[in-house]
Structures are given as C-alpha cells and as structure tokens.
Length: 328
Image 1 (spheres, rainbow, N blue to C red):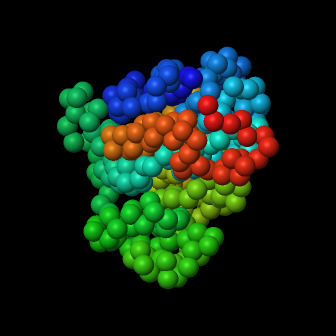
Image 2 (image 1 turned 90 degrees about the horizontal axis):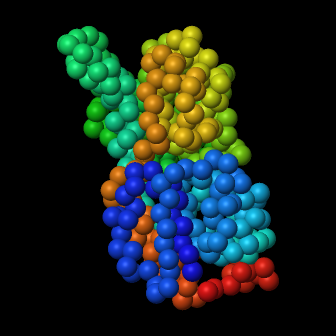
C-alpha cells in the first residue's frame, strides 16, 4: 500500500518521526510541492490508498474524493479540518482520522505577531541592516485593552499572557458565558463594545458557516483608528475585502495575519501591499513539538487502520456503513 504525505513545505517530514515504524509493506512518499489544480492533485494521488493532509493546506472536497477510488484512509493533522468534505467521505466509504497536536504554537505566534506589529520589529530589523538605526516609536501593551473573539483553548491561553502584561481583557463570542469569561480573567461584553473599546482585537474561533464573515465592514468600522486586529484562526472569519479597505484607508492602525482566504497567499495579492500589515505564511502550528505529534500520529493511525482498529476516527459511522471501503 502507498501513503502520501502532502504539503511538506519545509521538506522536514522525514526527520519528524520514525517512519521505519510503519507496517511492513507500506510505501511512503513525501510531497513538498503544493498543488492547487484538482486535476493535478487527482493525478498525483490516484494510486494511493492512504493520504495525509497538513491542516487545510490541500482541500479534499467531494469533487476530488469521488475521483480517488483507491483511497481508504484520509488523515488530517489535528482533530478537525474544515477543508475535508466529511459528508462526501462518509458516502464514499473513506475513513477520516486525526492526530494529536496542541494549540501552544498558535498562542505563541499570536503574541509574536502582536509584539512585532506594535514594536515595528520587522521594519526596524530591515532598516537597521540598511544603516537606519532606530526610526520608529512603538506602542506598549500594559494597560491596553485586548479584545478576544473566542475563549476556547487558544483564546484562554492568549488571555493568560495578557494578564501577565497587565492588560484589560474583554471577550465575546456567540455562545460565551459570563462564567467562562471570568474563568479566563476576562470581562464578557457584547460584540459592539468589544470592537469599540479594544486596542487589539484577536480572533480565536473555529471556522464554520456561523463564523464565516463574522468580522465584516460594520465591525471594522467600530474600531478605533489606533486599534489593531490579529487573526491566527482562519482567514474567512474576517471579510477580506472589508479588511483591505480599512487598511488602505488607514482607518485602523494595522493588522497581523497568519491565515487567509486562499493559501498560499498568491503573489500580487492586495494584502501584500496594504500599509501596516504583517503577513505570516500560516505558521501558528508550525513548531517542532506539533510536527512531532502530527507525524508520529500519522504513523500510529496507519498502523491502527491496517490492523483493523483505527484511532482518532472523525467519521466513525463510516466504519459500519455499507459503503466502507474496508481495511487492507
């Protein structure tokens, strides 16, 4: 059987786990090049029974899954993947599994982006190399108001760091309770108040039909001209066109972004040209600990699936359905 490891951007997957622990007879192939074209993707994967996708880098919609008749096991790194069509996988009998991997990397990057943006670290680094020493004035975070949209695992960790910086923390999400906010050291406010009062707005929600476009032109218009917005969750939660508009007009102080509507962000995209915008290539989870957990989990998933006892199954009903493509 053949296992495809996709979107190994850094070319390091081979070194992140002991691939010799794969069951006998499993042939693994690593792909560093990202494919956008569905026809090319199907051609690449047509002979593979086992496929791993790195987060949402490569989508697996129905239009792709229906053209992969040999596919039995689809693995995502992490426990959820909004770009995998789980309903289609169920109907086609394809098992979908996940791996372990914590949110600490995204928490750390969130604060890296905030501090880099407010202290102009990328600009100062470049200007220092060019001989221009100390050209900007930074903004401190002590006493500032941090507005958190979402207080799940990552949002709550971001709040802990904000407490250490002696910041005022306010929070909102559609289902947030006062008790949850207080547990995280935050004050529950309504959506309007969060955008009006925050010096920094940081998004920490799962992408869904309910959260897609949650931050649009009306919300961005409420922000202070001195306020910043950070998104390390998923790009489509913020209306991209509305964000570009406020950045181009300098209606807010800046944005730090690790996620986008389309990834990789195409060259020439307007966000590369907007002022006061810090761009990262979705690095939130890209740390050594997470990658070790991801790739070790893939090996565990393949071993468990080939022995007929799959682990961390996302679509468990497929295992007892008449469409189930079976174990090797």
